[in-house]
Image 1 (cartoon, helix red, strand yellow):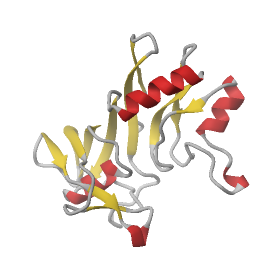
Image 2 (image 1 turned 180 degrees about the horizontal axis):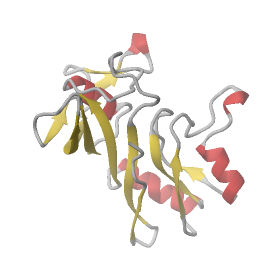
Image 3 (image 1 turned 90 degrees about the horizontal axis):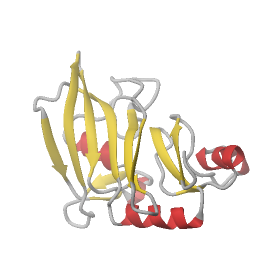
Image 4 (image 1 turned 60 degrees about the vertical axis):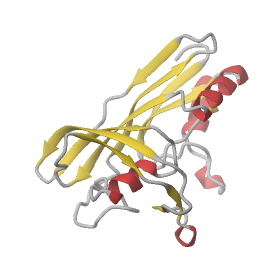
Length: 197
């Protein structure tokens, strides 16, 4: 945390921003505002995903971060435990994605009308029947990592939307473990949070 940005670790199961019903008011943004006063959310994680989220402490910092996200200048690293032992050591998934309208909020691969979506991955550890991957999303589509990994036959363990029933887990095994950004003055910053699996 500094005078511009707060980096917080969101637990799995907590919303990034308030939901519409009043009982869904508990979220990263409201907790940060209670703890720090001014705190403006700049990006989101799925409710089921844990890890780092940045909040701006001023409108200038929020504008700067929003512009960096839009220009894809912010680097994010995730870790995921996926089903099966991935054979290769590293690779790239380049599959266009779009909303699966009849099944919202699900997303789907669609070569005809999907938006370009790219994910880089690298094996960190092979476990009995599973693989721990380090993921770098080049684009930032909704559910991108989850759909891309399902599409290559290695859904994330514990994924209720895109996973397979035999790999049950207490949560979605996806964690935002590192984020790099620039301060308003141009200085580089980074935050890291080790994955819990």
